[in-house]
Image (cartoon, rainbow, N blue to C red; front, side, top):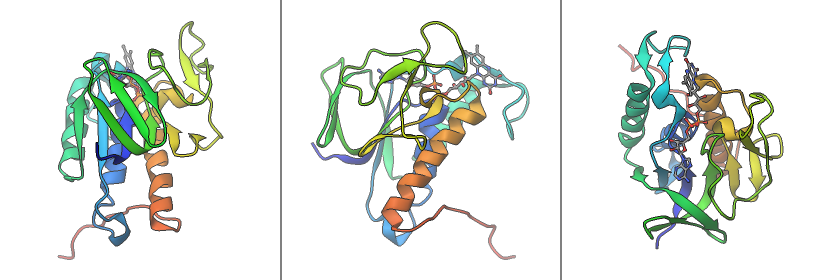
Length: 199
Ligand SMILES: Cc1cc2nc3c(=O)[nH]c(=O)nc-3n(C[C@H](O)[C@H](O)[C@H](O)COP(=O)(O)OP(=O)(O)OC[C@H]3O[C@@H](n4cnc5c(N)ncnc54)[C@H](O)[C@@H]3O)c2cc1C
């Protein structure tokens, strides 16, 4: 099994934002032939949302439409795939995740962004703690170092990182994790900013 460079578990706003931001660096020389894999079982909270307050998104947009757009946006960079998969356990060195249909995926870096309701994955790195901003029973977060790193080669993003449940916050943490990974790959502080072509 060839490991992806980044294996993202969870394809909600947190995971897809991370994937898009990583993939947007594909034309940098230091990006090389890196690949990104997203695993998702289709239960994003955003499917239930009717967005009027997500910055830059037309009010009245259905959350499912935003997820589809984000999936297309990631795939158009052609540096990775999205697999419909339900992850049940994971092991490390390198990260290897196992799914309920017996498939397995490997990755050098792991990004966990499975939302704050799901705790069915065995072998999660870090500690599972109550999700304080929401204050509702059963909501969880993973502990991290304050910069979304759980342990070597493992990050947490989206509401699972402890942020409040808003599209912009989940997506923002996903983008921050991606930028931190890009900085390691580039060997310097970096981010991708595109500008329109000269007219
Ligand atoms: C009814 C409702 C209305 C909302 N309205 C708004 C709104 O108007 N404005 C706003 O900003 N926010 C709104 N939100 C909040 C918004 O949807 C969340 O903040 C956002 O979806 C969190 O993103 P996330 O990526 O962290 O988690 P999620 O969107 O929950 O994504 C997590 C993903 O991980 C996947 N996953 C989990 N476990 C596994 C596993 N074992 N294997 C594989 N995949 C797995 C899930 O299928 C899911 O796709 C609303 C939420 C709800 C419930």
